[in-house]
Amino acid sequence: MFRVLAALRIGLGLAVLVTLLRWLPDFALFFTDEGALTLSALAVDTPQGKVAWSLYNICSYRWLPFLLFALTIASSLLLMAGWRCRLSGAALFVLFWSLQSRTAVASDGWDRALWITLALGVTMPWDRVWSATLSQVPLGRASWIGTGLMGVAVAIALLNPSGDFAGFLALGPRAQPLPEDVWYVTLAEDGSERRWNALDRSEPEWERTGGPPLDYRERLYQGRWEERDYHGLAVWWVYRLYLRDKRQDDSLRLRAVKLYRCSKRTGEAPYRLIASWPMGLSDGSSPPFTQDSPREARKGAP
Image (tube, rainbow, N blue to C red; front, side, top):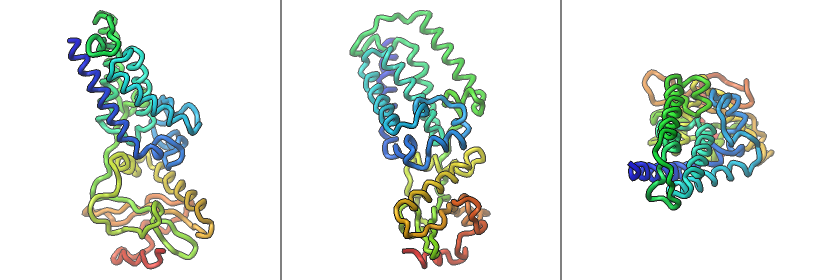
């Protein structure tokens, strides 16, 4: 029994560590206010942001996300090593809960499974063997009661995933990846009608071939832009890009940033305007070119 619990502890710590390392490429987007996914956007335009508890949301100091993320990595390593598991396990439980609440807009079923396993595991004596600091706490009634209570709380949250309790525990609905036959083009326009990709200033690629140049977490995030409860995130996206381009070069006379949904699905419009900034600056549902000849959009590209 104790060897099984120890193996669970080591495997869980390793899985959490791998998950954290996979978050690193998107750290600025999901954990800081430097990207489009700001704390303000989460609090206003996501259901979880209104009720979720997270240490990442307690203040806006720029160093706080880096500190919390580093502590989460350290706690994972300590749990794997079995160093004071009562302390390191509880710390990882709280820190990973905070991370899940902060990134619920781009979390999937695997993230939820890790959180549930960690929540149940911290109530068990999984440091009796294969541990740097061996514990002598017996597998007694208190452990089973703690595990049972935690299991009941998790079950209640999963039975009503759209409720406030599930949102508080970061156990609400999971994100779905952006489909392979759907992609987005973020178009920047200046006063002279020049157009370019607002992300990297390259030519807008309307006729995309192959998969989108996004990693898994970004596909989860963008997959939610058109969900009713998350539509405000698309507006935040173009707003932040509008501000960024305005700061970079005032001579561009930037007029707008627009987000288009492109699709190859049968029965869907090939291009559809999703969001724009300034708000209200819209030329309808079609991009600024004829749908029969999308390459015309590139004529004025710098």
